[in-house]
Each structure stands twice: as structure tokens, then as C-alpha cells.
Amino acid sequence: MEHAFSDNRNQHPDRCLVWGGYGWGNTGDDLTLAIALQDLRKGYGPHVTLLTPRSDHTGAAHPGVPLVGAPWDLPRGKFEQWLWHMADRAASHGRKDASAARWYRLALRFHRARPADGNWHEAFASASVLHLVGGGYLTDVFNLRYMLRPLHVARAMKLPIRTSPLGIGPFSDPGAGRGVARALQGAEVVVRDEVSLRFCQLHGLNVEERPDDGFRLREVVGPGVCADRDQGARRSIGVCIFSQFSDRWSPMVENWWVNCLRSLVLAFPRWCIEGFCFHTDRDMDFRMTRDLFSRAGLDANAVRPPDPDYRAAVASLRNFSAIVSTRFHAVVAASVFEIPCVAVAVNDYYEIKMRSAARHSRSPLSLLNPTQASPDAVIQHLQQALGGNAPVQHPSA
Image 1 (cartoon, rainbow, N blue to C red):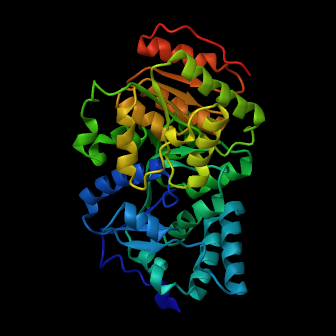
Image 2 (image 1 turned 90 degrees about the vertical axis):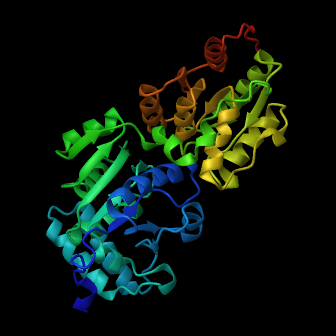
């Protein structure tokens, strides 16, 4: 079985393997992946391969890039599953990399790749680097075992790891944070916010800070996106609402949004209030925004359906005069387009993200938490940013 680990890097000394939080329909993840691919092609040419959990989605969003199925859903037999479990456990909780590496190499010996998804362990063996695309996926808000396995395999195979600007944490479990720090030991880490920077410094990681790659969206979405807005178009406010994976989302927060939407209508009676989505899954932004529009007495059909093309989704924001968003990369796009924006964060995870956007914003940006601020604060910020003089009116409950 030793042939499964033959080192092919002499054949392909400049081959890059890419991993990140993309593949699930998030517009921001596809945007940052596109920017990373642009950068990586300058150094690796066509020798860039994407690990992806969803080859259908990733292939449609980024055509022409070689795809390989990601290494967590492939094991079939119970013994092989147990080997992967032991390897992941050793990598997350063990004190020595050598122990985890032995378990991963043993698991690889019993691995059988799905032909349709490509041979991912051969992709690791032939690569010269594993590159992590930017995003906020290294947190126990999500499944860390899922996200960290490619890093552990790379370390087991002595593959260097580099990153685009990441958000790391926060962690509800300190042990999860230590596990992420172990996975990034020796890596060239780039982060996008001060909290992530302090985390890396605390754990002795090689780190630098840069703005999120979304601030470079002009490089990948096309020159037409940056054209001036049609001055004759009816003024509009774009609103994107979703739960932000928060256990703090509650009927009280939903009522806050209902009152916020009603206040927008009263404060800007001649403006369009439109909903938009930054995720292709209709059960996320689209469903929630439509539901709250209906509850506020607005037309649910004023919520635009998700756009599967991340470039078109980003470009659509250019037509808004102002934006109220729970999606981080919509806030980033508003900054790039110099559109006044209210960023809404209901938990620590999103507050850290939104604060990093505010640090680099080129337009008026206010950060609000529905559990702490009145909906009137949204109106006050937009009136000040837009130069409007409409009085704040309080909708009836």
C-alpha cells in the first residue's frame, strides 16, 4: 500500500491545492475564492486544484478549475471510519503531530476514492502547498472537524500551509481554539481582524493582518459593476436578513426587524424598500427576508430571489442607495461601492466580522445589535448618511 503515499512533488513542484468554506452557496465565499484563484494563478498557472464538498456548485461558479472531492465523506467501511476518527482525535487532542500523522497515513492506506470525485489523496501527494481561502470558517460555530481535516492531512504529509485573510474564532470551547492553533502551527497565516491577530499571537503563529479579500471585488466582478448608478432610477434601500447561525435569534429579534422595516417605510415613503440575498439556498436569506417583509406589511415579492452567479449578486447591490445587512460580504461590497450601510450583528461571531468591515469602510457604516439598539437607530444613521430630513416615526405595534 505504500504507493498511496509516493511523493510526486518532483513531478509537479508548483502545484497548489486549495481549501476553504466555499461550496455551499454563500456569495461571499465564492467572491473570496475567485480572488484567491486570481492570485494563485499568477504563481501556479493552471496547476491549481480545488477541494470541494459540492463539485456541482463550485464547478458552475468557477468553471475550468480542476476539482477534487473533499476528504470527509468518502470513508465507507466501519474500520476505515474508525481510523479517520482516531486520526482526527489525535490531531485535535494529542500533544505530538507524529501520532496524528501515523493515524492519517494508516487511514490513507485503507482509503478508496470515489472515481467521480477524483483521487483526493493523490492531489495532496502531488501538491507543493495547501492554500486556505479567506473566510470565517475556523470557529466552532461550524463543524471544525470538517474544516480542519485537510489541514491535518497536509501536516501529516509535510505539505506547507498558507492562507488568504481569515477570521479565526471566536470559540465557545477553548479546546477547539487550541485545536485550530495546532492545525496552523508552522503555517503562513494571514488574518482580517484584530481578534484573529491576537489569537495567532497568543498561540505563537506566524501571522500578518490584511483586509478581507472581498474589498478587492472590483478585480473579479467585472468593470461594468463599478459604473455610476443611474441617477434617474428610483431611490431604494436594500435589506438582507438571516439568523447568523445565532442562538440569540429569537421572537424579540424578529419583532425588531418587523419594526425596523415599518420604520423604513415611514421614514422614506418615496423610496423602494427591497430585499436581497447573499446565499443561493432559498431556505436562508430569501425565506427569512420574505417572511419578515410580509409580517411588516411589505410585499414579499419585493425580495429578490437568490442569484447563483456571485458576480451578479454583488453587482446588484450597486443599484441601492443604502443597505441594511446581516451578511458580512454585503457590508464589504457596500463599502467598496461607497453606499451608506447599517451592519446588523446579533452575536459575537458576526460582530467581529462587521467590526473588521467598519475598520476599512469607505462609506458611512453603523454597527447595531438588535438586542441592544432600537430600530430608530437604523433610521437615524441612514438619514444622517443620506442627508434626509424625514422625521423618525414610530410604527404601531
